Amino acid sequence: MRADAILETRGVTVRFGGVTALENVDFRLDNGELRCLIGPNGAGKSTFFKCLTGLLVPSEGSIYLQGEDFTGAHPHAIARRGVGIKTQVPSVMNTLSASENIWLSARQAQTSREANRTTEEVLQRLELQDIATDEVATLAHGKRQLVELGIVMAGRPSLVLLDEPAAGLTGEEVERMVSVIHELNRDAALVIVEHDMHFVRSIAQAVTVFHQGRVLTEAPVEAVMADPSVRDVYLGKRA
Amino acid sequence: MLREASLSAIIGLILMLVAPFVFDDIYTLTVLVIYGLLALSLGFIWGFGGILCFGQAAFFGLGAYAFAIASINFAEPWAAALIALIVPALFAAALGAMLFYGRLSDVYLAVVTLVATLILFKFMNSTAGSAYKIGNARLGGYNGIPGFDTLTLPWDRSEYLIDESLYYFCALILLAAFLGLRWLLTAPFGRILVGIRENELRAELVGYDVRLIKTLAFAIGGMLAGMAGMLFANWAEIVTPNLFSLSQSAEVIIWVIVGGAGSLLGPIVGAFALGALKFFLGQQTLVDNLFVLGSLLVLAVLFLPRGIVPTIALLFKGRRKGIRKKGARRTSRRRVRHAR
Image (cartoon, rainbow over all chains, first blue to last red):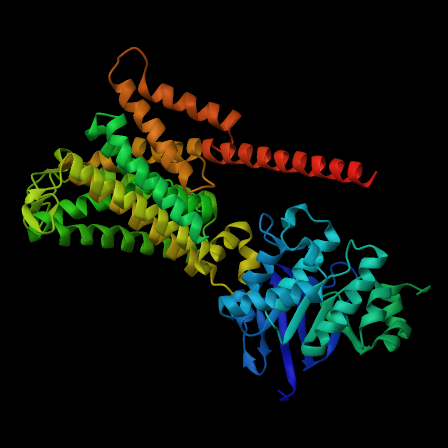
């Protein structure tokens, strides 16, 4: 494994009974890189994402974080290694306030005083001060997505895994999300699972395309858009 | 925060001092305080940790039995009291570790804890033979263990804690447990525990070992229930397998539901109210005790799903908000008039 790879998988395979959801996936992500994972439904993106987060243990293969084997590690151990995770449906603590949600994330690796400072900082960066004391359950979907990103940010991760961060957002919110992702990318490498190709174009440098549980291709976003095999299986002729 | 805690402590102390003058039956009052502590132990793990334990009576009974057995063997009631905290806490930690590291879901957790209690109940009932003894203490089967030394004043070993002195000791412990848990819930551990209750997956994804934190919370709840059991042994001066009974387990849950699981005060209020009612009903033969308790549970679930204390708190909160809104409206009207 090369020293500048923050994440690498070798031969990751996942089987559910007789069904192979992922087959022999080799993937690497360098420090500071931003990579989008795309592909049709059932291509294996989410299964791969779950393997990276520790929510699913691969049947075969290995996952390395900063050169260390983390295959089958518990999600909390992966998070402690500096991996921030945002799930598809905002996974937040509903009856707690936005600031309490962010504080709990910051407190994991910091003292209470430092966590207070980090919380203020994150609320400011995401412009969430107005809703800081609001119960998260009462917030709109877009704000909840931002609160979850705040939770991720507060952990000061070196690798961020985002599952469909633009899902269900309005045009204005998507723009905000793009700038937040670029901001995150200043300090961390990112892997983003996404369907929305406009969104992918606006954030990604490189894209990995999944198809039928395998990596179909891996290339810069424009090259992928022009790739006939990708157009065939995913984008369609008019893309 | 400190002001609120001091206020709670002062109110608690006043209630504790006034209660014996309001209720002249100090014996019943003492056991209500003990029930309050037992309910508080479940209120903490259920209301704040989201762990519905059907077997809080197991820790309660273990605390009582551990005290009786240690007191007979060591003839040192204060050392026995310490053992009565350690044994249930360790048992809860072991059981909790098995449940949480084993990734058992909520329903299974409730079933396993209930079964653990019933096993202890069955086992203790079948220990009548002379072979069942720990050191000098015979377990005594369904007759239980009588005749052990109870707590004395630490500075005068001939002065037993009994009647008023036992009441004040139990009330002080309840107050200390209440304030201790209040503090714990505002400390990072408590805040993380509430976060886990809200979203276990999110807590894991930010790096908390949910299994460990839940096991610790479960052990704290077990220790508090054991403490209640130890006090019960001192109050009753006998321990019997009934401490592990199904009705004991069910009653604690009813107290917590009726009082309100989402607060620390709720379970204590529930235990006091329903415990007092149980004693009152026990003095008559017209209506069955369990029938009344069961009916109250159904009514509470239907009409007060949050429980007594959280509902009252919500009403006050709503009223305060209403008053504040009215005040704000008046101020803005005055401003408008002033501007004109």
